[in-house]
Length: 359
Image (tube, rainbow, N blue to C red):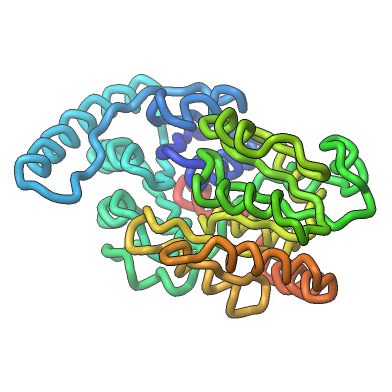
């Protein structure tokens, strides 16, 4: 059995797929460690899931400025060198980089030590760290076929999808609604801005909760940093439940007829796994607008509608939600279309590729 490192993070879209792959590798008898930023999401979630955690320190890539790029290059060299020592101490055999700037030093350090190297790209448009790491990777795991030619290097590509936590599939509608104190017979819309929350989705959720024409219930996962402000603004309207953070997303999905959310690949993978209709609001604050490109794929098969944040009118956005919630037949068809896109064996396929390199 081998010792394998999961490297990367910053957001749930990187952390949770990595852990899903790690869980499969652990079930197969391997020792799995997590390398990342102790001050970001992985520093909290990985230890909670039972992973030994090693702190890696690195600079984010600057978008402009020569001096900033020089500092980045020097910092990357220092971090890679420091990570080499940790890899040796841990007796590591392979590194899986899942994206986020913090994934680059472990993958590059593994390359200098001639360890096995794999990367996973969750989005249609690759991130900067994976563009760098693809040059030295021995295998590249993709979510979308369209990404195949967008990464440099000659490593073999495998389209496996985005691994999801199996717990997402375990939610039961009646029990979930009871947990949140929701009426089991009323349609429910779930608003969620991801692991960090999203101000514009919170704005839309509050407006929908206050909509005088609303006939549905609202379950609003607002994010911890927004909770007090949203609570003060929202008040206590009937049929609305506000939650700051939910680590049992299977329960939240099970309670919903429609999900209004961002379009990170991890979220989209969960929506397809559970077969939920969605109104996707791509984040505009991402590399090369990759969330909108992710979202358009689900829209093309009838599984979702896309609401572009730039220039939206709040009243029109509320009307979009209202119209969807009034059409139960359409929501059912969208859910079926979403389910048809699910790749429930993504984590197993990823683990197969890693084990293949280790043989």
